[in-house]
Length: 118
Image (cartoon, rainbow, N blue to C red):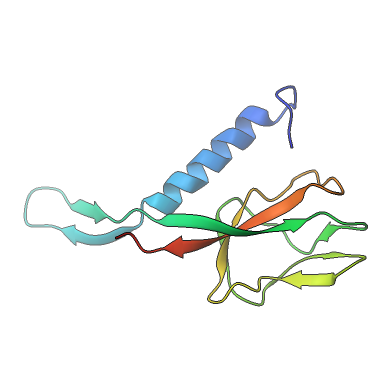
């Protein structure tokens, strides 16, 4: 986890918030009857259902962003204990809080699934 003294803390916080807001702003319909277009937005609700831990020889396979949607079976990281770890969430999942500075024994990432609002 980054401390408040980390030089990139503001940029990182801004990137995380921006990515989350982008995820929330997907238009589902638009109305062009009046001057200017208006969009109806459907918020995306996600629920964290699983966590991956950092183990010995942890290494990301690619570059991943906060709240990035990862298709099922996509390779994410490798380590000495499990080898290559892929997204095993049926239908894919959102990657939450990928560790920029992985520390053995701490969380590498959280998997989150889209949840239908009632």
